[in-house]
Length: 287
Image 1 (cartoon, rainbow, N blue to C red):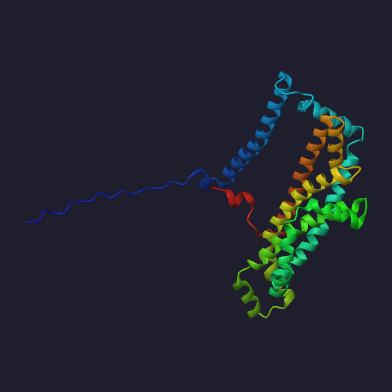
Image 2: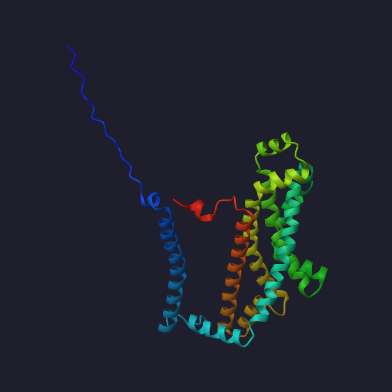
């Protein structure tokens, strides 16, 4: 005689909505405040630690001046008008080279991404040039353009070109074939295919490459100014180090950092305006 079947206890899981679901706007503001607080707290803590180390003699303040000394010297140079010519010289070279390199890289990236024959003809050559350190090209540009602004602008343009070219070509190749097929079904012309299919689908990835290129452009121009310039932030840093004016050297380094952050954020803001359909960075990383 078989035993009667045992009864199974059923467990019901009830999920209650969290604060992000009940009050999404409030939760987003709270999360944003926490993120901004952390972004400010970390560099502030490092600066305070540096100040404390210089005040207590843990580090040699002749080699690593205290942040208060650097700030005072920077303020003095800014008020006296000694800092702005170097900032303007560096900024002008970065902007000129960046515009030229971005335009050339985007145009060629679109062409190579759209044409397999052009890609087969040019990609091996450009891949070989891409791996060449860009500072190694500075003597070449000096021979081509002579002393002055030309070699430095050309160096920035060459650096930016490769970043934008690679991101543009990869973005165009990554456009789903279904998008292209839909455009052909509706009888889209070449311009319409570019305007309504390739451009919207590839532009977010292109702007990511452009943002990376913005930071690299600042790095390259500072290195170039240390070698072949009589002004600019790179020349200021190198000249101050040679004269053992370490406080002035750090003023130049801080200006380079601020310039790089501002330029990168400007490109990101431009990307948000040009691609309102693209997810924001905080939406990609939100958990």
